[in-house]
Length: 271
Image (cartoon, rainbow, N blue to C red):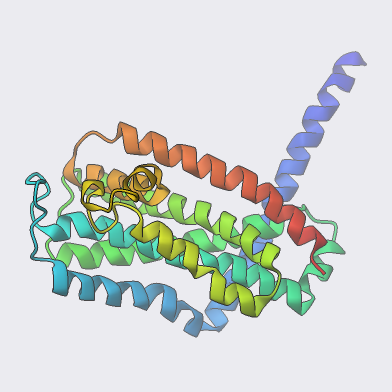
């Protein structure tokens, strides 16, 4: 009897995990069906990054990175930054979507159902992961046509997409908490993209950290955008990736755990 009693909490935890995964899958399916029925919502996250990529490469692609001869053409340095920048600019969609759902009364419907407290946020993120992966894959394929090379081959390309998805999802979690904290949809639409733009420019996305203004450099070195972009560059060049990988993992853990818990609580309390 004691052994059965000891196993009961473990069985309950497994049941809770299964219910969370099931509920999250249902919520993700709902968001994907909304995208399928409204394909116009995919125009911005899929077409806009390609337009920016072509414009950036056309204007700056033939520059040289002074002091960094190992980088070669600037496009080899620039493209990883563009991939990560676009993941950062796509991330606020998660928060804005949750805010619209809260304002439409959908939050009350979800709260009235016997479902996991975290399923709405996890389901939203699962949908975003698919969009981020498609976005990164399109950017990568287009970049190869502009001369971007990946020394690590197909495995490196898959790794680059995974980095973009992991980074984008961590920013999505933070944006969800920020949007639900702001609470007003109109204000959130104006405010949400500013942190992503700041993160992108105060980083190594477009220039080596040593080329930035002196006050920017300490911030840029620990910026998650710098970690993600440098990790993609390392994979593309086939070089050492331990340092940017550790920094990116640390940022992903921090951004997913703390804002994630806060976002779930805010969602549950949203009117």
